[in-house]
Image (cartoon, rainbow, N blue to C red):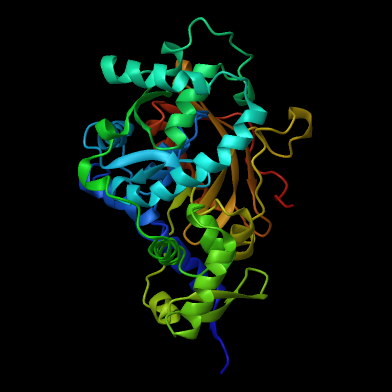
Length: 404
């Protein structure tokens, strides 16, 4: 029996709808609407860089025009509908998923016990009890509140002072949770004070945890390989995802499909049996232009994004300036169901100006008046979100097409 084929057009459409980019960015962008959006995505990555807006805020703004950062802060710090921990990176996660993170806490406790002894200064284990006693009696702390008499390093994560290392250990292993942030600095408190009691139930058994990790990832990706399923939450090993796929395929729970890439090649993936029909029933994404975060969940898997959209992208934050092809922090530009280019823009809040320092259309993309007007509209929306009054182009937009 031949595999079903999911055309590139339908694959993009399904993928974007699953990532909340297939509809107009309507909605209140706060409260239950915002919590539902984050649940649909699974999580949003947290990042400190704020050339325009922080990654988690831009991810939400690109899907809800009415979103503003205080709405996320309320869900995290007052309503406790979300919590902050690790997936593939630091992320904001729906609180009802907390029981599944119990497996991560146990895994990290065993894995980090050896690794951290090699990487960090001695003495952090001796601070566990001191820090817990202080938090129990005096309330939440930041890393600057503890270890005042300990030698500070030069700021690298490998050179934390022992009390900072202890805080991170206790957080990574679930004893502490992040109750909020102050100027992006983590505030640590006892987990029982942060995570609501209904979400502090015991961890699901390993089989249930693996089934959740795979089904929840496939729901959000639309189609995936076993490796992509394992990588989505970074919650289970790849062999476990492979075994799950093999059993689910044998039982008829999932099927194999050939997903057409942007270059016309076919890539076998797993999907729910109705995947083609589900994609055919979706409306095309609106032709609106959105400026995406480099850490947008639709682009997190760079290889997958390149297959689907023909868009090669690498962030150049850690590339020396002289060797950068585009810029320090360049934003992908999505129009409808096509990535049309990348833009280097930065908010200069003292001058209330969003400055465009470079724009590179993708090969084959022409910038006619209509498309240019939509790009200008997107930039002005972004400027307002970044507390800027104007958009200033420091360079002309006509640049050589981007490429690998």
